[in-house]
Length: 309
Image 1 (cartoon, one colour):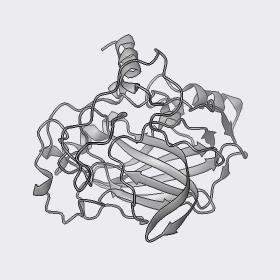
Image 2 (cartoon, rainbow, N blue to C red; image 1 turned 30 degrees about the vertical axis):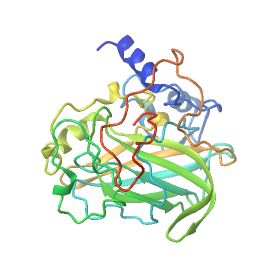
Image 3 (cartoon, rainbow, N blue to C red; image 1 turned 90 degrees about the vertical axis):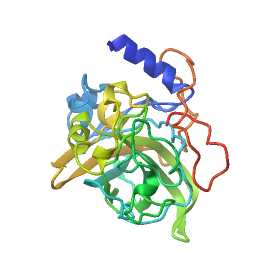
Image 4 (spheres, helix red, strand yellow; image 1 turned 180 degrees about the vertical axis):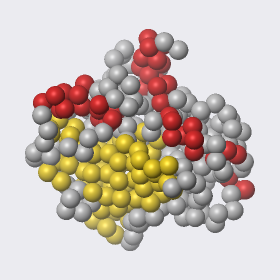
């Protein structure tokens, strides 16, 4: 697939979502380093592992993207979100900075993440086919709650940092490996979850393909077989490195991984992501693909309208 094909595919797949582009705000950045470092982050690398892939010193106003069709309200406040799900251990560490205030840390922001399990299933949507050949979710004997696993909130400290304990995500058609994220401010913790306030950023975290190549050889991931979408072919990842959600990953399959990203937000503005923001280059295009077949467990009979999955 050549570059023009990839660009055309992304333009068509985005539909009405803002994927990897700043939503009505423009991409700007601030840094404790020099101008060269800032320009590298703003322009993005030629490859996923280029200069924009990571620097905790750079604060970019990250573009929001679709929340996808697998979001559920009422996730719980907790650091460990595995609910017994098996997989390669992953620590997700995010730093939330105020891009409008000299990249100052944002304290007391509620960061919410959710992602699929090792076989490509989301909690609450356990009958949705992840593509390829995978065991039925009911065959997973880990004891995980099928409404809550791999979902949760944590609140940032004074340093703007939040950390989750989870597993490396599996894959499902037609997406590359990713984790969904929302940053909320102005609300409060109530009944174990988060209420009120506003969503400042809706994003997705991405991983260089090389990590999945090794992870997916191991059990239980290896029980899900099929064609895995590469990062360069993903319909949501914008190709701009860290500003488009590409995380820095350290560690190994045997010891577990740590995934980090610095996120710049505007705490005064709300951005729920799905269906909002400017069109990607190429015009309106066509609607993105529907999510994998199947109905969400305990949900209305119709699947949520699909932005990108």
